[in-house]
Length: 257
Image (cartoon, rainbow, N blue to C red; front, side):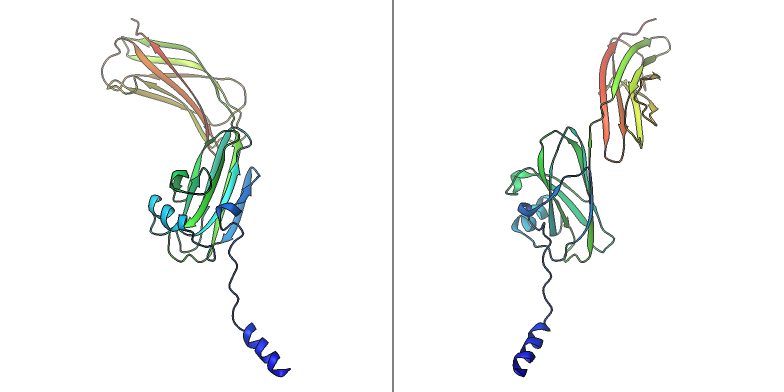
């Protein structure tokens, strides 16, 4: 009896190996089903699969790709999506996106050092890897994901006039946006893009009321005179913490005077 107890104590004295995270592979990826998701996750025990060690390391320009954990996202609507990883610990995080399983070089769409963001369409499905670009990572990584349905901007270009004598193009119209919180935004006017007679003007968008707001912007070419047909590109954007909604129109005008 004593021998059995002693043996049990000796066996139990060996430290137990920590289990890998539940989302250690693409097939067991954590589903991102809310508009905002954040978690702190320890990655030291996450396995390194052949895809991590070969494909992620090579094509993401990383010394290593270790401690990889996975997330899956299916877009419920057209919108903007951002996925970000960061850590207070002594390793450099990385991110990657694959479009289908099994994960392979052909399905690896994007890589980054900390953030992936962009537009998505309803029904888009993809898998996101968060990993360490530093060997033998120890500590935790914060994973944050956000999705927001598109909030289209209504842009109306009502008047474009070009004065040959003053060399000024005046663009007038309205914009309307409906973001709840605007971090930054703008209405831009670009003359003759891709030419040596380009010119640029802009106003700032600081809030969205949902109602049409008037704008008027004067632009002159950076050099040279206004001659022939002038191409005018007008764009508007309103941005929050997830991304930017944009609208653009291009018109042509002939200088008068």
